[in-house]
Image (cartoon, rainbow, N blue to C red; front, side, top):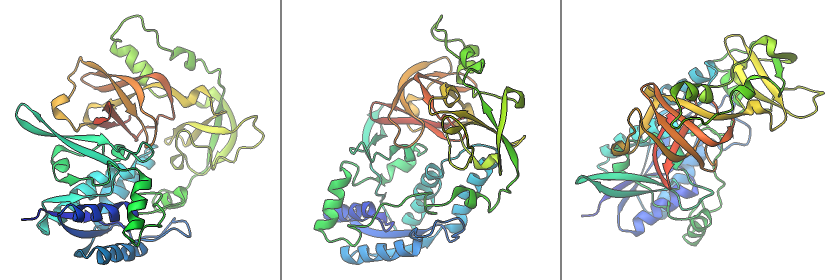
Length: 399
């Protein structure tokens, strides 16, 4: 009897080819389209709304001659992803809604809907791979980077569990994008020439301040410029006198910079510190500076933005970061670090960032990640994901 796979048909080329490949391999394939967002507030004109995607998904299912269903998760998506996003921005943090969407919707709500359709597996068009291995006689699932280095999407799946991985198939993870396009063209799939989607998962490309102003009020505040000679930049240079480093020194190296009104000078005004994130330069409207200004810190309680001049301002770079114990997630529980352990891994703090060499120090409070080279734009609320080679082992929310 054929194994049944429910494919998340998004109306894009990647999920279309995923469905085609599974059918070619002999699976009993069903397409399922998720409606997760109806509101167009803040959406940029010209962005393709979900109803266009639905039409493409239906056309693909018809072309492949597979059953097709649609399901509305918009209420759950708002509660689990969008409300969390608003709450994080209000705290002055920068969340990653795509990571949350995968954990809470695509690999949770979607899985439950697929089980109602008697699915044995679910499949998506993510560029990543899954392998199985045995540990003490028990099957363990490994999440591996996609074969296309320019499209690897394993980072977006950094919060998945073993249970979620056990049901997942990633049919295009071994392909590069050009190969996917070529298959779509050869099979005359309706999505063959369709552009990749951009912006927030299921919401689309948005003007972030406009989108956030649905719930977060604008309020005038000052922009304070910090000189590159600020004393704390020197104090935060590591002194590797002892290895492993004591926790007190790790705390110092992995903490965010902290500024006061007296540390700099007022150079402009803004409409709300919660609309800005570290590394941002758009929307500052600061003129007359020798170089571009970038956000190096925000204080949402006092409604102050701190900026620095130039792409290489030391306030943009940090040696390390900290993930509290309650925010640590391991995909491989059998490889979980224990307090007192330290290990060398490669880490990324945002999608498409090249993997960076780092040492992870596990303590009771959480994990300190110390990088070999200072990292630009470490941002509270984002996810750091650590890998052993091409395998994603764990992740956590940056404090």
